[in-house]
Length: 259
Image 1 (tube, rainbow, N blue to C red):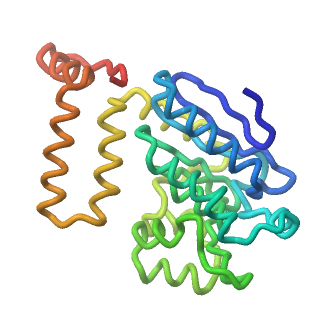
Image 2: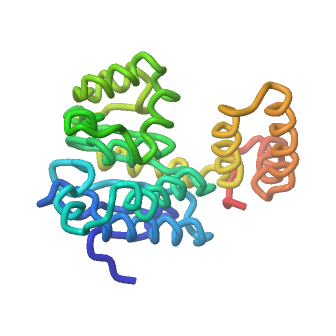
Image 3: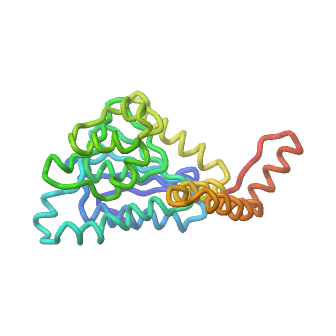
């Protein structure tokens, strides 16, 4: 299957999705977003895929929405969000496989939203995250108002949104916005190593763990406890749990197969 604005491939059980509009700083246009969604759907449906890595070519992860295309398309912002952005964010959150974002340079506006929708973010030292929306008279979108306060708390989320200032990678790590910062030259290798590590773990358990952690935000304690019990029953019947038990009894490292 051919792509125009992204690259897609599967390497050692990892689906690698690469934004590939470097001359436009990977600004998000309809083509990129629709291809991104299709790649996520392909990764979700492929049993050989056990983790997803989202990365980008060039100097920036993504500078945000492609405003020129938005002006030229005649589509209002709400329709553009519902048509192109919301399906991508929902696909990233609902896929029952871990999603890692590798961020270099700037992740701004909806580009930051795409990164924040990942399960784990690994960033280069030069990276920064900017809620640039209010700088151009808009409000945050593409999931930023949902993800950001859950990651860093209301005070820091409001500060980032109201000032529109870029948050350097090291500060984002201190805030808990991202998982880890690495030297620029090590980003690609570190991201691929992390994705490979997750791909070798029990995929079904990871996917369901991600789901119940998301649902915890809206549940009371009793509801969440019951959800944990129901989900534990599901994973107890997996091949990977059976392998873990056998490995424990045989005093060896388990070899998970993702089922």
